[in-house]
Length: 238
Ligand code: FPP
Image: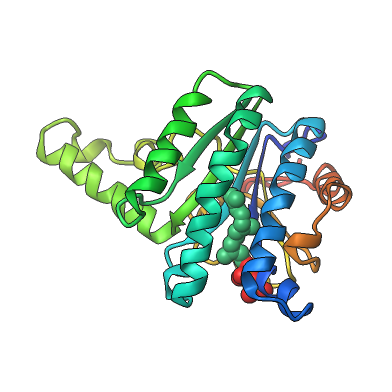
């Protein structure tokens, strides 16, 4: 049996329920996304207090392009605004920001802002915020396999050395530890293509609260439940 420390090192969150939150108020879905963006700062600050070193959030999936053009364009605008507004705060609060996902389909102005924020915060180490943007777990594994095949082709990697230790070096998350706890808000019990490889042994919490209502208090309660779970990683209890 593996003893848990009081807090997980790495928490990953599927921030779901923004659209329903807005619809319940007869407001456009984007109003819900804006309310959701406000929660990110609160949960990030709470992570520091709870001794969580890595926070990873699912902001836009490879499937989210199927939403209306208005919603997609509004979300892209929101991401740009968020980065412009929050960069200095994030830097000063010691947050190291990284983005995972495929940048190829994102507009160059957004990619420039993402690169700039990564560079600005590259020496920070208080808490690591990873934002999944145009991210899909299967897409990430496929892109990793492509890079790995290229290294084999170039003679840099022997196919015999491909194993579950070498493969994750090709994933977008190669510098991050695996998540200990994955939280999904809004009552849906699905993982929706999020961190498929990395979450093999993660604990899951599916919470009824919609993301814009997900407070630091609720977060602390959910994280507190993690401490009493037994993580066995496939082993038998002694
Ligand atoms: C899911 O709710 C949420 C999203 C697809 C977008 C998540 C984005 C944010 C929280 C905005 C801010 C993020 C950053 C990093 C600034 P949904 O629209 O699927 O809700 P529904 O299931 O109720 O329709």
